[in-house]
Length: 104
Image (cartoon, rainbow, N blue to C red; front, side, top):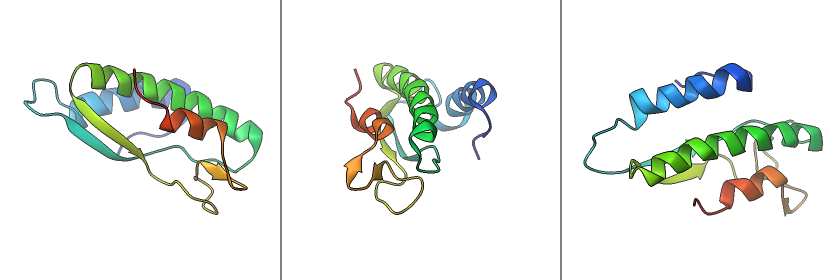
């Protein structure tokens, strides 16, 4: 299981976990990340924090894509009413817009 916690400790630990356990370098084929995400209590301030986590993680996933180690990534929960959804009140939340943006 990947590490969890605040951004200052969790994101570097997650990066190391992905490199060591999920996307080993030197693999002949790219991998797909089928479930990733960050929880939210549904409020706008909480989504701001989640947006920062999404942006930092996407930067790491983008690096893996450019290296040919990652082919695709899917957010774990898309639809409301689940508190971890990227939708609220029939619209895509700011963090959700980051989730579905193309990787560069």
